[in-house]
Structures are given as structure tokens and as C-alpha cells.
Length: 537
Image (tube, rainbow, N blue to C red; front, side):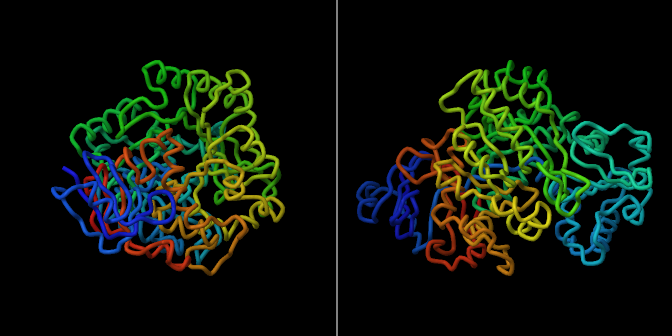
């Protein structure tokens, strides 16, 4: 049965806008004027009047953590209570009261840069004021730092003599554990928190997909294996996705950014048939995903020079150059795509070197290896990214917060050549966009606004490097066609064109005519996956 959507303002992936499109059997079959579309669809077609509303293909969030979002939805929402340390602690007390028991209290979303009452990270003593009867784990918004209370330290067996893990740090104050854990050290905490079973994983994914649909997101490139890496096998995560797909309950197309930290485990994964592209239109294996360094907000992003506001540190490299070379080289030889998180420029140096070595050893014409985040950069690195033919997974929404700290953290020289995604786009590099959710909400229209204005969401700060601003069309494309390019699917989705998957979104206003500072306020009215409505606002 054909369905004709007419009388709209339809962005097909090219300008000018058209009025109508036709969907049949989960695919777009036509796009053009109302008259042309009606003739193509025929008199028997179901007709849907768009009433002048804007339509475009469904959005792709090209880097996020779907399972982590589902897990966060079941924990204390600290992002709503990070205006002060006292508010954060009260949120945890309320959660303890509303979720009684002996198990872990978990929360995520705090950011000390927003605290109005103190100018520091929380520590174990702060969390002890909530309770010492139950262990508490409160994760920073960036996911690269967490804090626990004394009960948790006791359960973990962490003392002043505990060895510091490679690629991470256990916080100390006056020689004693202060409850703070950074990057790889966080795994010590995560290993002690009971993992969900497969049915609980499925429920987390259902909830997370519903949230994504509400923002118009129909495709997620997601890093899930790192959420419970030692207690929840990747096999179970894959089974959960495939069972949801078989039951018709998967309302987001998933491209798994497969996170591994050791070559033996990666080899076992690949030898089991898990290579880039294996799977279906709803769930398939994507790239090897690696985490190269930390985050700017936690001062764990790995810089080539000391932090301007913390000269005692350059950040934390998660992997040695040798490990990066080994893992990336193996994946490249196996025909796998690779995507590496790199926020600091020193980390980026290591990742670019590993890519150069891998491609010299085993040249590939269309590898689409990429850099996730690509924030703190130098001009020489931008040139090398172009020369290597890499893909960039940007997060324009990060400007909302980072605009407040980037020059303070890295100094004016590095800040002047960072977050340069427009320069890369102009140089022919494919730049997709995303949220890194749950670091940020998967709010595509907010991300588009930040990409276009280069300001924070309130409009009070910035613009930061205004020459790096995207046009509205470039911003939309970064969430659509370039997102599809990141998963080798630009011939399958990302545009409203014949033969493409009929994933689309209806918006309450045309972003091409809206004032740039109001883009985030444009509501998502409806979201469709394969022609089936999965969200109605």
C-alpha cells in the first residue's frame, strides 16, 4: 500500500524543498511536487496532509551510548541537580528514600563547573553525608570521572596502598583515597556493581529508544559493550538487540561501535563473525571503538602541553602507543572500521600515528576510520585527518558547556584551532554529529542550533570561532546523510529519495526559515521508522 505525504516543506537532502513524498513497503519511492507525487502514488494511495509542516529524513546520532542511557534513566538524574553541590546531595538523599534497600545508589550528570556553592569536585565525605549504610556511585556528566562514598571504598577494598591502574587514576587527598576515580580506574567501581540480566537490558534499551524517537532520532551509532564490560558479555548485549528486533520492538536502527580494550578479546569477537557491516538494517556491527583519553571537563583529556589551569597535569592517555598500534592494525587487517575517542591533541597524535601505520601495512581504499569528538586540535593534525581520509564524529552540542572552559583549560593558542569541524567539512572530510548521550541529551535541534550559532544554548556566551559555524543545511546533513556515511549506509538512508529506508521526522517549524537562536525550540511532532510511526508529540 502506497502512502502519499503531501502539502509539506520537505528537505530531501538537497535544496530547494519539495512538497511531497511517497512511502511503500518501508521505503521512499518518490519525492517531488504535490502534483507529481499524486500522479505517482495513484488514486488508491493513502493520503496524509502535512499541512505545511517540515519533513526530513530521520536523524542519526553518530556517537552515543544507548545502553548507558537506559541505565542512567534508572538512576538518580543528577544533571537536573547540578546547580550546586548541596542540590546534588539532596537529589541522592531523595533517591535513597524513594529506592530503599541495601544495594548501590547510582546517579549520573553532575558537573562541578556549574556548582554555585563550592568550586571543586565532590568527594567521599560529601557522599557520606547522604548515607554510609549503602554504597554510592555518582558519575560526572562526561563519564570520565566518578565519586563514591566511604562504604563503597570499603566494599572495593581501596586503600592508600592500592596500585594506580594504567590509563586511570584513583584520587588521593593527604595520601588517602578521596573517593574520586578517573577513566580506567572507574572500572574498579563498575566491576563491583551488579550487571543487569538480559531482560533488564532489553527494558533499558526500550526506554532509551523511546527517548531517542522523541527527539526525531531513528539511527544510533552506539558504544554499549563498555557499560558493564567485565560483568555483561557482548554476546548478551547482541542477543538483547536481536530479540528486540525479532519482536518488532526495536524502534531505532543500531550500528554497534564495538568497544574492546585487549587484542585477545577483539580477536575472539571478530573470529565469531562480528565484522563491520554484519547484521541487518536494524542491528549491525560497526567499528572497533577505542577510548584514547579522558575529557576536558575532568582535565583528563590528554594534551601536548600542561593544562593552562592545572599545570601539574597533561591529562591521561588511556592506551600506550603500542596498544593502539596493535589493536588498530589488527582491526584494519580484518577489514574492520575503527573509531577512536580523542579529545586532547596529544591523544590525537597517537591515534593518527596508529592509523598511518595500519594503512601503510594494509592499505584500504574506503576504510572510513574515524575520530570521535576531535576537539582539541592543531592545524597540522587537521591536514593529516584530511590526508588519511578519516571520518569525524563531532558533537556540536558540546559547545554549550565547553565554550565556558576551553580557553581556560587549554590556553588561547590551542583554543584558537580547536572544534574546527567546519574547516574539516570544507576540506572534504565527512563530519557527522551526535550527542555522546548520556553525556548530553540526544536533542538534535539543540545540537543543530549550537552548530549554526557557535554559542551556548542561552545565546549569552560566544560565538566561539564563528568562522567554524555550519549553515542550517550543513547542520542537518551532519545528522542525516553524513551520519549514514559513518556507517557505510548513504545508499540506504540519510535522504528522502527513491529506494531509501522511509525513516523520517516531522518538525513544528522549518529550520531553514527559523531564527538561528530558536532552532532548539522547534518541536518534533512525529517520528517514523520504515514508514511506521514510532513517536507522536
